[in-house]
Image (cartoon, rainbow, N blue to C red; front, side, top):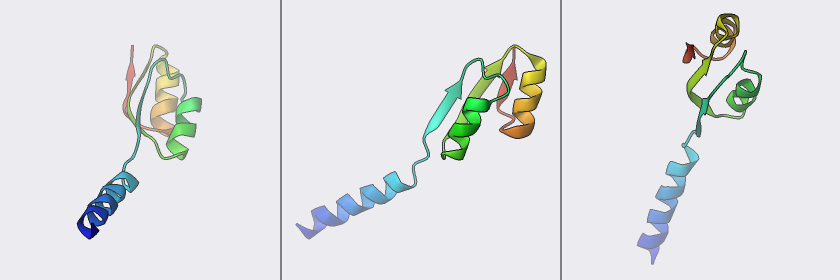
Length: 68
């Protein structure tokens, strides 16, 4: 039984290090994405069709934003 408990705690430790990931479509300047970023989420991919919004997003949140 103690082996089962040890394995369960090892799995919980892995979950504790997990960082949820998001993608963002039509991100704009990243207002919603910034909130997710502050909550601990990682942005995997973001895009927008406005070059100024993409520049703002890249400066404030992440350079993982794509234009077009």
